[in-house]
Image (cartoon, rainbow, N blue to C red; front, side, top):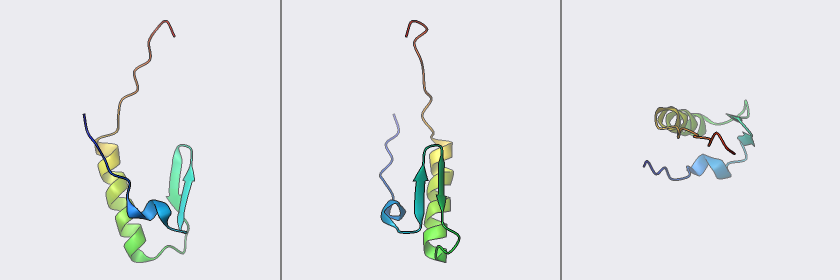
Amino acid sequence: MTVMLLPDFINSKYFVMEPGNWHLKPDAPPKVVKDFNNWMKEYKRHKPISVRNKNG
């Protein structure tokens, strides 16, 4: 099991958390953009697989 800590950019005023569409506002500073891109790259690499029971 992979554990990922929540990144600092989550509390940034530039971060938008829409279901299935995390993104940054266009005016996000380069440091926030870099942190966001690095974190998303790692998240996609370790993205949990959702397994659904056929009976429910």
